[in-house]
Image (spheres, rainbow, N blue to C red):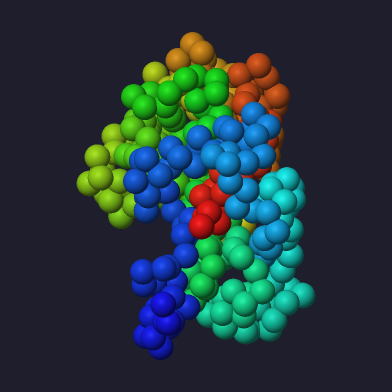
Length: 323
Ligand code: CP
Ligand code: NVA
């Protein structure tokens, strides 16, 4: 069918009937779609190279675009794409024309002429949405100031490997109400877990994100009491107290002063469920948000969690690239 100028424009802007399958945030998907991505991830992890008889990454090219540093996201997407039979090209804002002010819309339209999908780690969520609007290939959120969905898909996969189905279980978040907990909030309704978030005053997650999740049926408890936060939790999660690109707001010293009571140490882990595991997206600071005894101890799942970024992102790439 010949595309009219309008349908061509709509498709170029990531809209219309043949819009690309973006992966922007967990709360944009039906539970069955998220489950399908996790099933694909598990198949890849088992060593299958063509789940469902398909190899949608074969011969494909992925662009990884970074406005902030990365170790795991960069390497896991690069390795994953190679294992799927494809290749990647990496752009950092410094060293590309993005750093000199070329618009994200123009970058999206140009990259779409060269590659089959784009992973974007950006300082501002608005830039991710602009990339998705103007790209005619799938765009995957590689972390923004507002969310980190690939990470939480890997975390849910890790939880289920160790603790069984996450539906009906309790996950506790301690510390800063940042981009990573936002994706945990997004996942609470579709995956059916209860989420308890313990933060000091002034560090709570975005109320609009919490409200939207509750409206979708999520069971979310907000507290300033770390002990109440971890009670009954099958998994305790924390993250850095100072995210990348955190400009303005509290200084590092103010953050450390406010957040120290939320540090995950052995005594706090002992107040969670007896078999509770610990997760952290990494990189971690053993002087701040977690003790060495916890992150390097028997309840820590952080290395499985980091490994699962690879498998889950292959599931997500498969889902996005599949015809
Ligand atoms: N957890 C995570 O996204 O790590 P990187 O910043 O190293 O990609
Ligand atoms: N909240 C952290 C996560 C890093 C993977 C940050 O945004 O820096």
